[in-house]
Length: 375
Image (tube, rainbow, N blue to C red; front, side, top):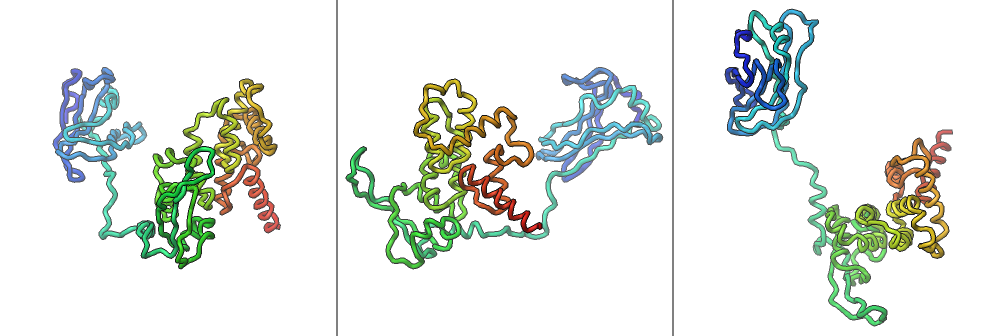
């Protein structure tokens, strides 16, 4: 009440009576002549909402000032903003509105300021409803001998020294799995055994820790970023060998991100990427070649590079000339980024593992099939 007669000196405040909302006590602090904080302009009214309770709360809030009689006049309001209100702390606007304008919005000398509060907390259900327990139940069967019908012995022989054929025997690590789980998630590994086989299947060329990650992934577990970074190539090798496509591509994404391509390592990385059908990693290398041709020319021999890679190189060069976008405009599959090709294949339920040429051929074949059905 009596807003016009309130002090107009900067930094002098008036407070509203406390009110309750969401189990907290609140009050509005108004600076008729402007706040004392940096950014407060002279001649502007500052307004803040204070949480007077000892507990913190997150809430959406806004202030609204409407003209008491003329609805055609502009309403002043702050946007709904989510804020964390700690105990005894206020949030608001340094420059809510000009004082001279606020004076024209009084109702018989009284300033009516609406405070809108909305809790971020979702309404609680009347009862507890558990989520689908499939993933947790699957992980209970991970490496559980009683729930398994096939056994693997991993390791057991390692190279005794470089350039020697003689191998030294070590104690293998035993793993247990369900054949049906492997058939769905690691088909090539499932093909190496039959349900109920008494003899354990020997697995060589894979470290036990890496095999454990693969098996854990097959049961719905997640391989951490740190584990992927530390074992990227070993995981790619094993996942490619046993048909665990998604894990292979996760490790490839990490390898692509962490590898700095240089003139010195470019060729080795390119040959490796091509041998494992690592299209994303290969794309990064081809982009490097296209951008640094002047540095590579005469310093790197391409005699051992398979001829099929020339198509990828031309794609990188052409894409670089046309655009720096992450994907080609329209539906030009030949210039499309690997990530977009894989996404389209995934959306259509097609295999996302393979070279650029393989992926493009699959998409074109699927498109032709769709057109035939439409006819």
